[in-house]
Image 1 (tube, rainbow over the protein chains, first blue to last red):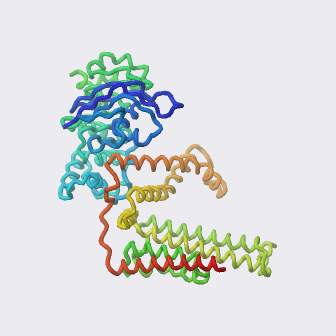
Image 2 (tube, rainbow over the protein chains, first blue to last red):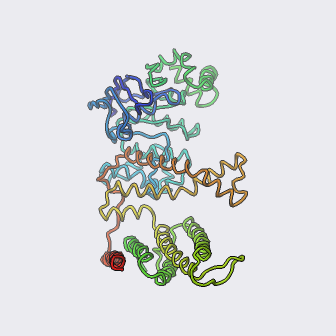
Image 3 (spheres, rainbow over the protein chains, first blue to last red):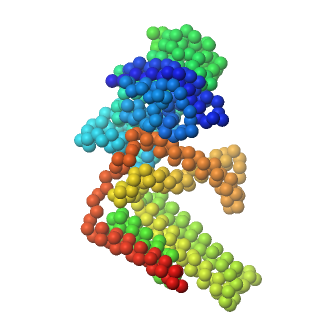
Length: 273
Length: 249
């Protein structure tokens, strides 16, 4: 089951010479729901995910944080100081860094996560098979993980985290290296795992975020400019056209009015609901 | 002949130590013997076509470098008698001998290491280091460095290709290639360091900690334990002998 994530008055400054990356933000993500964090580059999307995962504190010692982050029943004040895995799974924006380079096959690479968690070896094969089937990686199990395409690497990176079945999953722009079919497949999968997992997705692809998100948070310059449900977001959709890419908005509005591709039809049907 | 990674590692260490402790004539014989290693044991053969190509390329560069080293020493170290003249410049036998000695030592050092790394997968090195009770964090740092070296040529090629696509005549001459290489060196190193940090973070995000065994290593045989201990002892004795000689003389 997913866990709640609560962020209260989170302020973060990477260094005393820089302005605040996050300027007192607050929002909740309920268990088994999905929150999409939208915003232009530098808005603070990745900083929020890093703060929740625990790596912000452990890798930016000079950074200054204030506020509270609650993950399930555990309150971290101000933010977690070490990796919260396996309670929190975090897939970084560059999927290739998730490939350790230590293993000769995709199966071994994914299994390594289970070894770090001391999962009994008798369960490894079953857990790996389940996740690879779900992500369509079955045919890659015996391939070298360093010799995969961008989309395949993205899915293997995701599998290395999801195999641990984290109750909270953070995804930083997960569709960057995927083609449109890969994007739809991933989001279909995320909709499925949302039943048991709390999802936070930093995304620039707004139509895909709408496909899976229950709540949306729009950031600008480290401040929240919108925090609400999907329906509320759609009602105020025109307010954010200056913050987010205009071309994307044009595409979204066009696709809602006149859906042509499979993805657009899906989006239109999701928005119609 | 079957040789496991531990024995191979300690033999490589012994050869490296020999390069700087034993007389250069012994070093030259050992250098020749390193070329026989892949013929004597499959454990020293390159693990892939890429490794084979890397070995051939490195051998070519090493031969050129050794030649240049000997030539420069023969020209610049004006000791002994002039052996012959090269383009009107006299080459001296004292400098020639010093160049041969230095080149032999460097070639023995580099070929020993090359044979080891081109014939041993990174994961096997990791599992062996793990058995020596070195902390996983240190092993991981080493692996990240090896990974960086492994990816460096491909990364350079990619940057060169991108530069060429923009119309820069990167490969028009050898000197332009060398000049271009120095231009990209700093950003190349910085991005590689940044990527190594990200890889470390990614492992931390997968729950990697000091208690985690990276890989399951096969148990060592009795003969490999004896051989590796013998090579290690010999290496230490050679270092000790060298230090004593240095202090006494």
